[in-house]
Image (cartoon, rainbow, N blue to C red):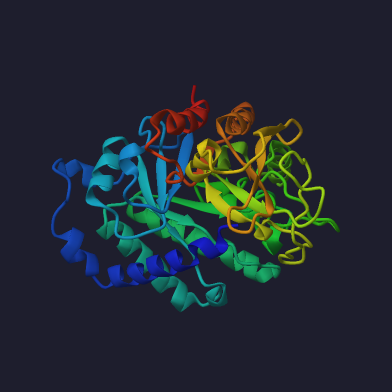
Length: 379
């Protein structure tokens, strides 16, 4: 789950968007285009295409991106580095802001109108290309659900009125059947936005079981089931983007027979929004850190194993501080490729990654393998 991870970031962005609405960015960006080629300050003017959307939390890793396959970067920080803006637009890659919205203000038309205008001011004054809605709050009330759809629709309408190439997208649960109590109007959201990003990197936020065990974060079987559930609502595959993880989960094993060669790791019972078990029992580690653990001789671990059912790698190790056994589940180029090829076969709109700053760029070959696994969607 990335809810807590991005909470502070979203607050900061919303605050900056308010300041932007009051001409803060006129001095920093609005007075002149920061790019030597002034045309790069125009919004990307490319129509509908296959997408690779990369979520980003770090404004310093962009020199290592594979610009040949990226189409959109959703940034969860501000300000955007000038060089990132110019580089992205030179490759026809959109930059959009990841934004949230206070659920308590749904239905407050005055607040909503001002909020939309603030976001539009932010995007225009920073020469960027749109918004990515990342609302993950529980909504079980049908009226609130419709109000959220209306917010997205009105935002998209306002943005498209200024520039038809502005992009407005929405992050959604991996399946539309009230995952995490997000009982949204998914068909309406698909119609109100350019496309939806399915959070297939978050498939263990709720696990209904009496026995909690460590397991894969993004098994392709669940991704496929979620896609079918979306299309059964009447949502076109061209409106669906598969979100994939460049990270893993480190789970503490709490009872025997956990060891370096054990397949089963019982984990603490950590309920989440009505489910008995959740990935909150573990902690997220980015792919670069996990690969460093695998190559570090000081880490006492078992062999790297592959679950043929879940199509995912994992390994056991002893925590260096406590000495207790842990199990690490993650995604690598092989497991990512399985899901990317599934999305390609189903003719989805594209793929996305949370997030593209989670690689260890000191190891170029290791990083490029991950980029290439995504790039196979376009080949």
